[in-house]
Amino acid sequence: MTVYFNNVYINDYITMISSLDRDVTVKNDVDILVDDFYYKSKKITSAEAMYQKEVVNKLLSKNNLSYKKIDLLVGGDLENQLSATNKTASILKIPFLGTYSACATFVESLIIGAVFLSSKKINNTIVVSSSHNLVCERQFRYPIEYGSKKSKTNTFTLTGAASSLLTNKKSRVKIESATIGKVVDIGYKNVNNIGAVMASSCAETLYSHFEETNRKYNYYDLILTGDLGKYGINIMLEYLNKKYSVKLKKVKDAGSNIYNLKKYNDIAGASGPICLPIYLFSKVLKNKKYKKILIVGTGSLHSSDTSKLKESIPSVSHAISLEVIE
Amino acid sequence: MKIEEYMEIVKNNSEKENKLFNTFMAFISGGVISLVGEIIFFILTNHFNFSPNTGYTIVTIIFIVVACVLTGLSVFDNIAHKFKAGVLIPITGFAHSMSSSAMDNNDEGFVFGMGSNMFKLGGTVIIYGVISSFIFAFIKGVFL
Image 1 (cartoon, helix red, strand yellow):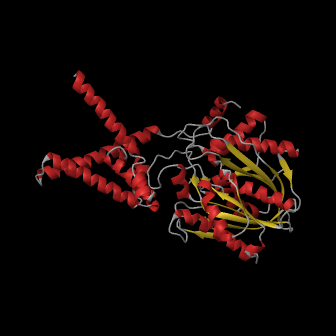
Image 2 (image 1 turned 60 degrees about the vertical axis):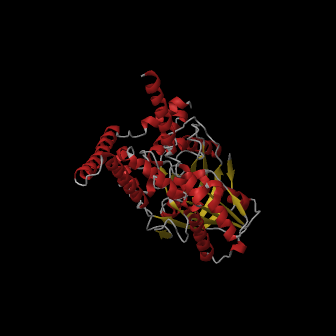
Image 3 (image 1 turned 60 degrees about the horizontal axis):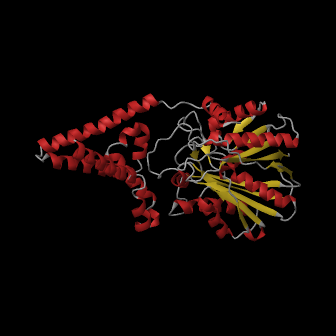
């Protein structure tokens, strides 16, 4: 399902990352770099809300806006029942819609904000998302300090947050269209290989996007996926080739490029809903050669119980077409 | 696409875990821990003249304390990643699982947080250890 938008622009964005455990390649390009899992809090669960509050407040102050002038806040995170984003929304006092599609949350929130703006029901919106490594480990895997066996296909959840301001006012980055993905459950069960879980839905969404927009496969200067990881990206390309005979080029994965995988060869990449916005805002948009960009957020829709119950894991991917206007 | 075909694609695009290396590291690390235990036991019984039973108890206590302290200092999980499962099989692993679970749920209070979650990972060992002891004792007592 592809929707086209009228006059929706990304006016500004703030990225924040904590690089405590591992070195990130974007450390000189993000707006806020910290080294603290407990950022301004006593508990890690409140720290994630503090990350979100920081990026939204900086976005507001940078654009001389107060929270009263913002019509809508859309966002989500990986914590149970969106606890972190709910807490942020209660502090910020902006009308709030919470979204969840795991690591595709930021892209889903951008789509929802863009639909409201395009139909002129609101004047502006702020989209926010975050993730915290320790909170995810504790919720989905084992206790934080437990030395469980990590396989090579495991990804390392980023700690940080990202926010962006969307309005109808013309700016450098335009949101041109979006393809809302269908949930794909191919029967795959290994929760330690998230890249393989998400590759199928990423491929299906990409195929739907090109079919519905009737664009050629070399239309975009860059296709940026969220966090498929170094194995997932190859699985996705082979799936597309085998099922639809499509050979996609100029594809990059944000998660595989945030950590230097030659240095950290024990993981498949970074993961979390903020992989895509951090890489997009810090690296891709600063590169002038990318004028037409397709971002695909990928999400693995498993709960903490899915792997224990030995059920297959569904996944979803959403795509947004961006145009950079100089 | 059928799941079998998808599994084929996943298999083509993944690296194999080095099971031989992991097994070797587990063998060495488990062996080293046991050797250290034997050396301490020898010192306790020969130089300090403890009885064998007291010696075993003291060695066990030393392992548990060391494992818990290293877990608290956030060092034990790095050791486990490097030296594989050999450090998790002896009593050190059980103490590590209990202390890491307790640390995790510290925020939720003593009763419903730390107390009820401490045996989250280690509870299995106790339950099935007791059940299997019962079964083997029954077999030994009745049939042998």
